[in-house]
Length: 196
Image (cartoon, rainbow, N blue to C red):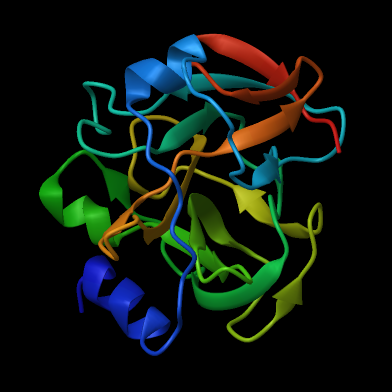
């Protein structure tokens, strides 16, 4: 089953709240008006300094997605960026690479939030996933340890949130975060420190 189909299967029958859509350029430049989108915590323990290696719609592997890649060492504690229910998880892979078949090799956790959006956390180390399907998690709770599995060139945490646009179409949702710099949309090539 493809991850898109898995996502649709998990959300069947759930009414999602649509989010206002902004272009990537608007998000980077702060050119938007009233932003009522959810504010996430960085998915790491409080005070952790992390480097954002890849951002929205970047040329390497995020060409058409609003996903974030945090460069962190294998074994870094990964925490829930928002409370929810675990709807999918995998922890048994030790494979990685940059071939098409490696897309299905990653260890992951998917957490559904109360507005039916789903956060996807990818590339956990083998046996580094600490939660299981059906578990309730709270913001800041330890959920696993980062790794380098799946479609991956270096140890990192891939984070993205999927939901629906105003037309009811499945889409990536841009995410803003609490950081020590305030509430912001993150930009690649910069360091950020977790604040709750």
